[in-house]
Image (cartoon, rainbow, N blue to C red; front, side):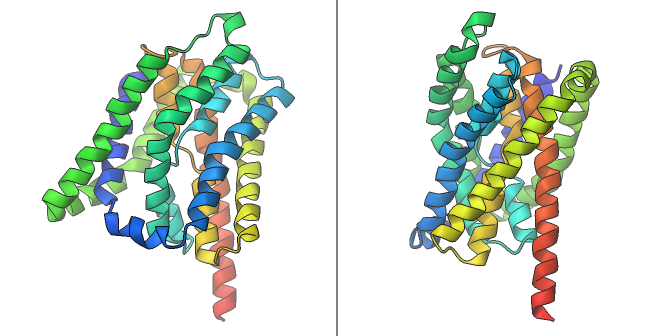
Amino acid sequence: MAIWIVLPILTLLMFDLGLSLKFEDFGKVFRAPWPIVVALVGQLVLLPLIALGLAAAFDLQPVFFIGLVLIACCPGGSSSNVFSKLAGGDVALSVTLTALSSVITLFTIPLVMSWATALVGTSVGISLPVGNLIKQNLVLMLLPVLLGIGLHYAWPKVAERVDRVLGRLAFPLLLVLITVFYIQHHRTILDNIGVLGACVTALILLAVGCASLLSRLVRTDARQRRTVVIEVGMQNAAQAIAIASSPIIFANEEMAIPAILYSLMMNIVLLIYVGVVRRRGRRERQ
């Protein structure tokens, strides 16, 4: 049941991302490339490596091991743009990073997940049909983004109105998805919430901490640093759930549980982060 909810949600989120993309934003940001480099390294390299280390350290069972690596491999979530705005970050940088990671992960997810599945999944009968994964990602990820970009440049006023509506729907739709998943799998979630919850929370905190440290090392400004922290910490849980649940890929809804827990914890952690940043900003203005 959940797969027929997550597929349209993911498609709408990616279409909305395309609606908000402006090619001029890429030009502005590429003139200062270090924040992009730091964010992509943090999201596409460090986060999967941290997930692999934590999955091994917490001795997760194979289905959750693969699920944790899967959410770590996914691109930035569409809500990161809203969080960046709330935190006083660089929204143009946020949109650009979400778009870049969404395209790059079309190629990196099959590579990393093939390795992770071979590492722990073969012994329990879990395999990855790479061709089906690539096809699904092209249809659900790339195509909606391209359609959104096309609408944005063909009918900008219509695109702006549609973007406003979809922007309001994104978070409630994810809550509906999480609720449905919890109802279906509440027993498994409750049985594993201790170890798996601690592992997921550690992943988010380490991701946020590493992103902040890397940003400081390359001397990004405060607005860019906030955006990098949010982008690295906020993953596209809908995509992870779609891959785990898809009948043509893993067809395993339990594998999506780490993504569900990650989605809940990342919003809590990053809302706290936004609150701290905004409070600090108010103090500095006084």
